Amino acid sequence: MSDFPSSILVTCAGGAQGSAIVQACRVAGATVRVLLRKGSPDPFGDGVNIVRGDPADADRVGLACLGVDAVALTLPLNASPKEILRYGRNMIDAAQAADVSLWCSTPAVMFPGIPARR
Image (cartoon, rainbow, N blue to C red; front, side):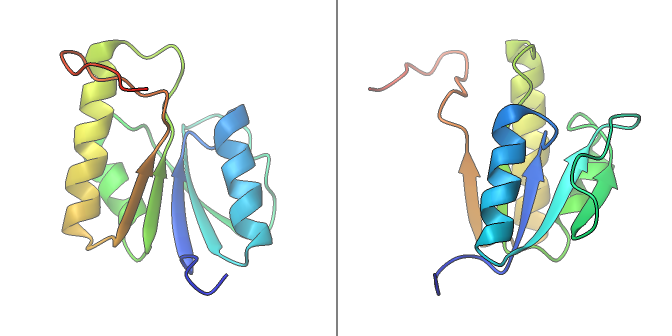
C-alpha cells in the first residue's frame, strides 16, 4: 500500500470504530497516534503513541496533529450536534495548521443544516 499514510492520528480511538481503524493502520505499517480522553484505558499497548485530551480542547488537538500525515476523525456517539461541530472545527483547524495532507471522517457524522446524502 504505497499510497497509505506513514503516520495517522485517530480520534476517539477507544471506541469500536476508532480501535478498528487503529488496528487496520497498524497492519498497514503506519505509525499511529491516538487522541484518548484522560482516564480512559489504553487498549493498544506498545506501538501506539497516545496524546491524552478531549476533542473539545483545541490545544490538545493541535498537539495531537503535529507531525502526522493523516487524520481519521471518529466522534463519540453521544455527542450533541453542538459538540460535533466544535470537535470538527477544532480538528480541521489543527490539521490545517499542522499541514496534514489527508483527512477523513466517519460517514455517520452529520452536521446540522447540511442534508445527508445517500
